[in-house]
Amino acid sequence: MNDKDEKPTAGKSQVTRRGFVQFVSRGAGGAIAVGAALKIATSKIFPESLPARSIAPGDQKWVMVIDLAKCDGCRDCTKACSMMHYAPPMQEWIKVFEITDNPAAGPFFMPRPCMQCDNPPCVRGCPVGATYKRTDGIVIQDDDRCIGCRNCIAQCPYSARSFNWGEPPHSPEELAKPYNVEYNYPHRKGTVEKCIFCPQELREGRLPACASTCKMGAIYFGDELEDAVTNGKGETIQFTKIAKRGAGFRLMEELGTEPRVYYLPPSSRKYPAPDEKRQASSTPMKMEG
Ligand code: SF4
Image 1 (cartoon, rainbow, N blue to C red):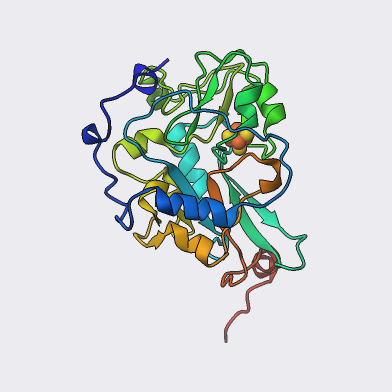
Image 2 (image 1 turned 90 degrees about the horizontal axis):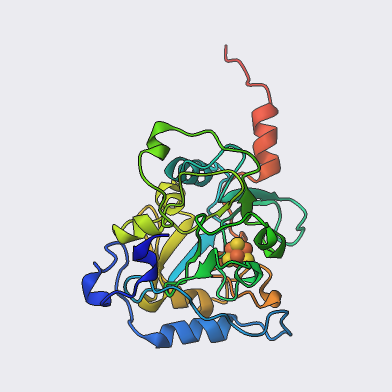
């Protein structure tokens, strides 16, 4: 277990303010506005929110916004994530799906990281507290505690978790450091893994690997309390504007899981859809002359 993750810190003064987040309108008002505007009035399967169990540095509330109109399906986010975390083969902590069965929106690509739910069923389902909620919104996974029961995998409605059925192959770089819950490697047999929003990068004032790598600028990340999210191209948008535009939505919101990942719709997508991409790559090139 990592001491840094469990002990309360002296607070914000010890933490460098996020360099990549532009200060817009500090305070809880923005967060409340977003919550009110985006809330869907439905009966929820998990009505009560779980309290955070681990005190993270600072008083941030990390949030991710994925603009589906910008994602061109290149999967650079998946590759960057796997490289940063030395993810075992076949694991994709952020997966890019091709959505082709939605006639209203048309085909589009949809990256799916862990939703870092504020009311996480995986945390409820873990009998040993190996996965838990931090005050900064991250749902962390501690493989020092994981007993491999896989109940968290069964509970997650987003299929955001993976299991190491065998001992994963290791690289010298992965084994160079002792296990730390904030980067969650070296990996080991019989444990569960998932996206954790790259807390070690956030400590250094950097974006998570997926957001910083996305050339399309489709993945925005920031502090909900600062009301601003920034993408890898340095573009910042006001988080509450998502609510004002009525554009932001969360996956399976009706379950009451309260995801910390928001999506902007693919309605103005300017890039080839999955089918168009396939057709383009299978069409023989015309020879000149
Ligand atoms: Fe847990 Fe799944 Fe929610 Fe992530 S998406 S916090 S793994 S329930």
